Image (tube, rainbow, N blue to C red; front, side, top):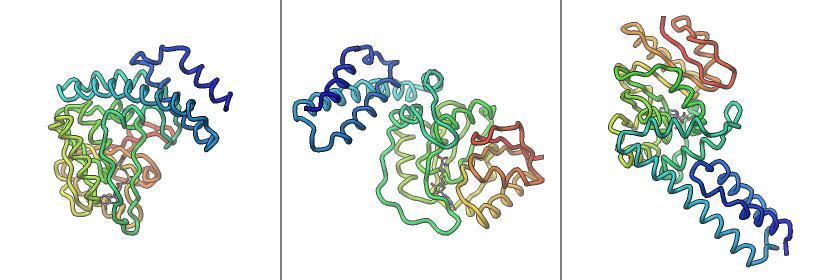
Length: 279
Ligand SMILES: C[S@@+](CC[C@H](N)C(=O)[O-])C[C@H]1O[C@@H](n2cnc3c(N)ncnc32)[C@H](O)[C@@H]1O
């Protein structure tokens, strides 16, 4: 018998306050603790102990699901900004730079995006999919002063986290442009399930996209080298006709910081989103 694991499970069950909705962080922590202990114990785990652990995990997940469903219903009824921003503010933030934390677990539960299977390999200079950590998306939303006159375009939108959350939390029109068809299908499905009429997704190479409606552009280093250069030239061309704003995360920030037609709006910490405005 694994007495250490047994003891840990007893401790988890002793204080039942994890059932309260706002204890989401604690529940996710308990799930992670059990998974780690379960992997560590391997085949030596006693069946009765395994059964108790699994039952607890099912209850934890069901409790989380009820919370996610409440937030999803708020979003569907147009109350998502209040609901989600309140929950996001209450979550402890542990992640640094580009790592993920509990807020990502909350967002993943709320969006409930269908996981696409294998996707075709991308061409040279195109960066594989990795979502912006949720705290950076909320930071972008808080700092970019996005209004109802804005059209926010995520260039290389992946599964659509930035577009979907911006559509929930702001009145702007939000557009994601992504090359991978399976990501676009999941993102569209999510927008429809959440009744997000201000979110749309286009399956396209950004180099062929029409950017003339965009007022705010988001780039989490989606491409590098000559592709980034070509897209920056397209954006520069747009900026000749009207003022545009850009938000970046990752190594592309350094490249944008050297563009003479752009100025950085505020000094950003390394590892956080940077905001630019066309001159
Ligand atoms: C680092 S991920 C960023 C995902 C998303 N913007 C986010 O922040 O959550 C880069 C995405 O850009 C997409 N991508 C790369 N090159 C592209 C291109 N030329 N046109 C459209 N999408 C592209 C990739 O498929 C990938 O989903």
